[in-house]
Image (cartoon, rainbow, N blue to C red):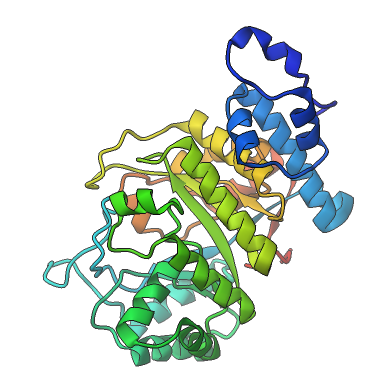
Length: 376
C-alpha cells in the first residue's frame, strides 16, 4: 500500500547520487521528469522506484477512468500469427528468421490463416497480432488480398498487424510513400499497428544489433503517419543486450515526444532480450532489471494511459509482480507465439490463469480489446 511520498534522506548512506526531495515529490505529484532525472531515479532501491511507479499508475488510471480505473487490470485474448519466417535483415537478436533456402521457411496459406483465426474466436479472442519477416518477394497485392480475405471472413476480429520495420521494408520494395501503403492496408482491413521492431530507438545501438533494419527515425515516421491516418499503435522496447541505461532513457524520450505530437499510442510494452539460439550473446538481464526498467518507463511516459506487463519473457509470477511496478495490463494469453519462444522463452497462460493472477492482488480482471475498451 502507498501512504505518502518517500523521503530522500533514507538514502544518504548509499554513497550514490540519488534524487532530492524536490524530484521525488515531483514524481509523486505526477509532474514530468527529464532524462537526467530518470537516470537519478534509476538508482533508487527497487522497492522505492516501484512505489513511485505504482503511484504514477494510479494517477494515470484515475485520469483515464476515474476511481474505477485503479480497481481494474485488463488482458486481451488474441493470437500472434507470423505470416512468414523468411527475412532478409538477419537481426542478431532473432532466432526466428529463415532464408528462402531453409527447409523450414514458410509463407502462410489463407486456409491456415482461417484455421488459426477460427481457433482464436472459439477461445473468445477478438484480435490477431500479425507480423512476419521482411520477405523480399511477396507483392503488395499479396498483402492486400490477405487483409481483405481476413476482414471479409472475420469482420469481428481486429487485425493488429505489421510493425514499423515491415512498413519501411514495404516502402523500399514497393516504391510507394508510407502514407499510400498504410492507407491501402487500412482500406483492406488493417485495424491497428503493433510496436514491434522498436528495440532501442538509438541508431548506434540499432547499427550493432540490426544494421539492415529500419533506423529510429524510420520507426517513428511510420507511427506518425499511422496516427495521422487514424490508426492507433503500441510502443515497445526490447532491452538488456548492448544498450546503456542512458540509451533506454533516450528511447523513452523519443516515444514520449511522439506521443505528445500524435497521441496515437495506446500502450507501452517493454521486455527483456532472450539470448538462446541467437547470434547476439550479450548477457541477459533478470527480473530485478526488468521491474526497474518497467517502473521507470511508467514514470517517464506520463502521456501513456497504459503499461503492459511482460509475463511472456519473465514468467507469470514476475508478470504478476509487475502489476505493482507500474503496469495496469497483463497483456495477451498468447494462444500462439513463435518469435520469443524461438529464443528460449516458453511460458504459457490461459484466461483462468490471467484472472487468478490479477484477482489475487485484489484487482478486478477484465478482458479488453486493442483500444482498451472493456469486453466483460
